[in-house]
Amino acid sequence: MLDYTEYTKFLVSLIAIVNPLGIIPIYISLTADYSSAERAKIARTVIIAATTILLVTAFLGQWILEFFGISINSFRVGGGIMLLLMGIGMLHNTSKGLKQNHELAQQSGESIAVVPLAMPLLAGPGAISTVIINAYKGHGVAHYSIIALDIILLGLLLWILLLLVPWIARRMSTNGINIATRIMGLILAAIAVEFIANGLKGLFPALAG
Image (cartoon, rainbow, N blue to C red; front, side, top):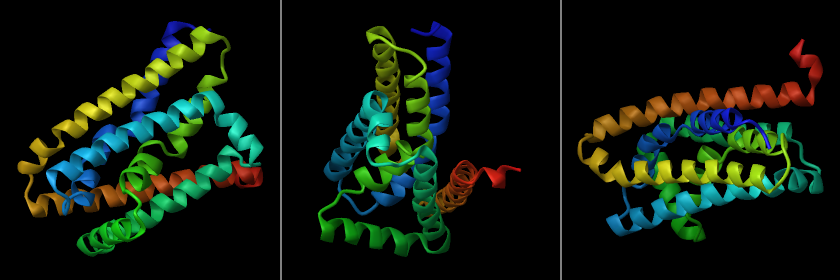
């Protein structure tokens, strides 16, 4: 078991990496064509999916990656590419891209709550790698229990923020949402490049020089 300050640092770093506030304009934009009931269902699914992914990662993350022969650096590159494509789409044609995402979600029966909201936007390469690294810093039931508690606290914070989204949306104009979405698209693209760059440096150490 680690010092309690280490678990506090883990929670703070996880919140910073997940960036709960950053998902709000993206969530508003992606759910613009959904009813209130559908948005509430999506919000619940986002929280459950993201929290579950991080909890599973804490206990089985390293084993799963090793089983499939996947390194964290490869995961960073793959997740970064997904984020980059989404960020570029948001920058070039927000309304068209969002409609296509909505139509694809309906046609395929898949929910945007899991992809891209829960993963990779919330439980992405950065969050997953952070959880794996911190989970394997210690051993024992107490250690993993506190790691799991930190992840659950993060889930509660996300849930509270998504509950406030309708209130925020009512106070944002369409132009405001579009501007915020384009800004987030730019930020997402920048984050994606960082993920890809760090992943490539890990895969090819010569690039770090």
